[in-house]
Length: 275
Image (tube, rainbow, N blue to C red):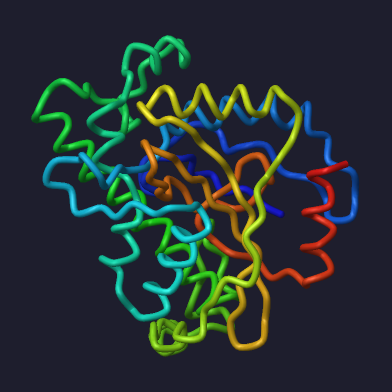
């Protein structure tokens, strides 16, 4: 599995913190203690994306009874070509309104202007700007997800030459047809679990954005008979769950993008969580 250079809450075009640590190799035992200790840096530095639907003022974000429902519904919206519906499952507004900026900066021990998420939550101007940049980062993750499915031979982290390569401009245009995503479904959604330190890190990450709980999941997607691995981070505000990232730093999944995986390899990955 691979990790992207973009971290939580960071639009791809803005330089962000270092990428989360790589996850376990398939079929090997997962070094959870090491992963949990190192990955918390990525969780906090990324400044999570998310939103609350109930009690969120004029927010149009939608809350869900379970994390699985949030993931399944947002995936259905992508398959239907409904970008706004998919983004409604994210909690951009609540995090912008509840970010503990002092706690975040103390944890970072630095202020990075390129971090578009670290803005005061008690200043109306900055809250509105943060809502917009967080929504943009969520959209960027869906962009990476869909391109990884529609153009699997394109490297999302580098430039693909057209004049000398095997891919033409028309190939790109023809490939980027969202109608081809109509059959996208979630086959399995499994929670990432580890030692007590992992739970502490997740709780601290949730606290920094005013959430009650944070979890991470791995997801087995299916499209046209092929299966793919993705990661999802979710937050709970009260009784409502929303998506805050299309990545599991603890499982080492890519930022937004999906990668091909067999059902057997997925089973081995999930088994590592309990080893």
